[in-house]
Structures are given as C-alpha cells and as structure tokens.
Image 1: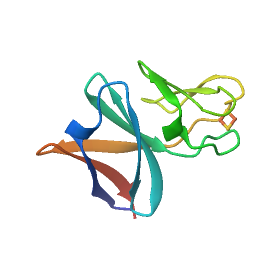
Image 2: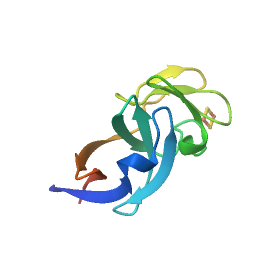
Image 3: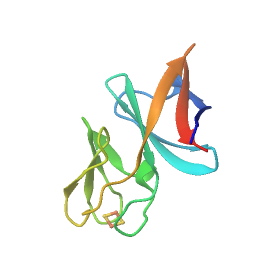
Length: 105
Ligand code: FES
C-alpha cells in the first residue's frame, strides 16, 4: 500500500518537550517533539484509549494522562504498566518547516 505524507503542523509551533494532537488521513495522531526531532503516534493509548497528546513527555518517554502508562515515542513500545501493548507509530518528514506524517492508504 502506498504511503501518503500529510502536512499537519508547523514545526516551529511545537516546542521541544511538547505534544500536539493533529489529524492525518483520517487518523488521530499525537506528535511529539524530542529535542527537535519529531515523532508521530496513534493518539489513543493502547490501555483504555486515553488521548496521548494530553499526556506528558520527558525525553522519549510519553506518559499517558489517565493511568500513567508510559510509551517510547520512537518505537511505540510500552515501558510502564498498565500500558502493555505497543502504540502504532507513523513516519515523519519535515519539508520547508512543515511536519508531514506518512499514512498508508
Ligand atoms: S488509558 Fe493510558 S494507561 Fe490507561
């Protein structure tokens, strides 16, 4: 399946250490800025679907706002209970200061 990159935000609008909710290709996405590198994850926590963009980011560790489960934003792997399933990650590109998220169609 081809991957289409969707523009979702200006890179300058998301500071290092911040999370932001965006939509791309009909998917709810959580963007994370880790020291200037951007990562994209499915916004729904794999525990009970809390919105991960409302969580907190420390380095590459994203803490869910509801029960405190933690995910690695690079791999999507769960790092702390009650998160036990990985969250889907998406490819990210930056072009002319715009963040693009790759979604398979
Ligand atoms: S909903 Fe995220 S840890 Fe429970």
